[in-house]
Image 1 (cartoon, rainbow, N blue to C red):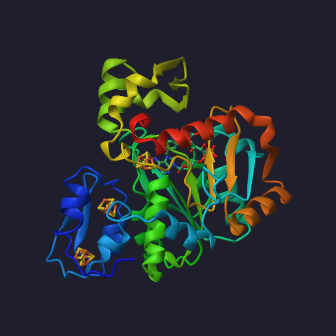
Image 2: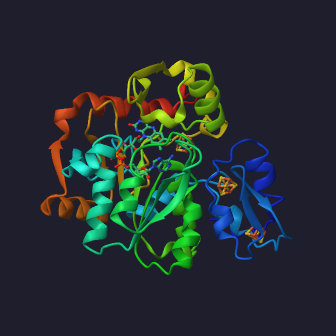
Amino acid sequence: MSSNKISFEDSLVPKVIESGNCISCGACVVSCPFSCLDYAEGKPNLIKECQICGICARVCPRYEWWLAEAENFAFGRKRKPEEKYGVCRRLLIAQAKDNKVLKVCQDGGITTALLLFALEKKIIDGAVVSGIDLKRPFYPIPKLATSSEELLKAAGTRYSCSPNILALSEVVKQKKSNVAFVGTPCQIHALRRMQMAGLKKLTRPLKFLIGLMCSESFNYEGLMKNHIQEKLGINLRNIKKINIKGKMLVTTDTEVTAIPLKEVKQYARTSCYICEDFSSELADISVGGLGLNEWTFTIIRSEKGEELISNAETAGFINTKPVEEGAFALRLLKKLTLKKKTPSTHL
Ligand SMILES: Cc1cc2nc3c(=O)[nH]c(=O)nc-3n(C[C@H](O)[C@H](O)[C@H](O)COP(=O)(O)OP(=O)(O)OC[C@H]3O[C@@H](n4cnc5c(N)ncnc54)[C@H](O)[C@@H]3O)c2cc1C
Ligand code: SF4
Ligand code: SF4
Ligand code: SF4
């Protein structure tokens, strides 16, 4: 890894922010040891004189990125040629057992069920997830959840960027020592960079990383306000769920409106255009819907991921099925992985 001491203005500003490649992860903001950066309107901003330590550039996954190095760091080995969707110990299809989870989750609720299990068994004392902004429906905000109620409230998917890494400041402030992290593939990249840069205060509490599969995330104003609210006339406060199953499905109490994906793609964030990771290839456990109904497609990548899933299953928190029962989802995983790694077909 580069040890260059380079300023924020000479590194991230031209190469990541002005070029439109910033994924708004917030890793640079929480990592600056001199608190020189704040986060506003999805971007880091310099608020006092940069001390030219180069740390923000070292943690930014869009400044420099070496997949093989990050893979070795996370799993102790590089992927085998046949592991097209990243290092993999086991594939399965899983579902939460608790009806409280199934009522509020996005797919099979495996993410929330694993967090509830880990919290109840005191494996973690909190989880970084995406919370709800009460003023703006479906606007995601970073959240450190420390109770089952908070985890249940945070379940489900908001398809805009939630800079969950910013909540690591809260983890430090509240002196939490064992936390789980849920985030998109790009956020998992940033966390691995922070771990590799040796930022112990921020990363030591991280016990396991759950990565969401992700084709793209959408600009909130464009998708939610301009398209769903204004063009389609759907009151955002009446929406119960938004999911993507071939089309974007917007569910209210009274109807389900299907929006063709080609109509919503125009709102995809520009920083997603160059993203090559569909399945959160550096997470301990990766989860996605992949066209399944009420089940979550799950990739176990690390030993701690394996231990968590096995223990949650034994304790009766989740049900699992062999991946063979979701053969079409596995085909879709392979297709979407390849699509993201082929620049011309990517969004
Ligand atoms: C932007 C985005 C795009 C996605 N695209 C795909 C896709 O193309 N194909 C696919 O198969 N799956 C995709 N997913 C993943 C899918 O929507 C589900 O999150 C996943 O299947 C897990 O379902 P679950 O029922 O286990 O999760 P749940 O138990 O419902 O838990 C979901 C967790 O995700 C967190 N979360 C919600 N929104 C965000 C956000 N914006 N950023 C970070 N964390 C968040 C919640 O706080 C919660 O902890 C996407 C998710 C996001 C956030
Ligand atoms: S981490 Fe902070 S002080 Fe260091 S280069 Fe970046 S902005 Fe400047
Ligand atoms: S670390 Fe994240 S928020 Fe900061 S410049 Fe890089 S991509 Fe943007
Ligand atoms: S497509 Fe890539 S860059 Fe965009 S939100 Fe998903 S993981 Fe992040």
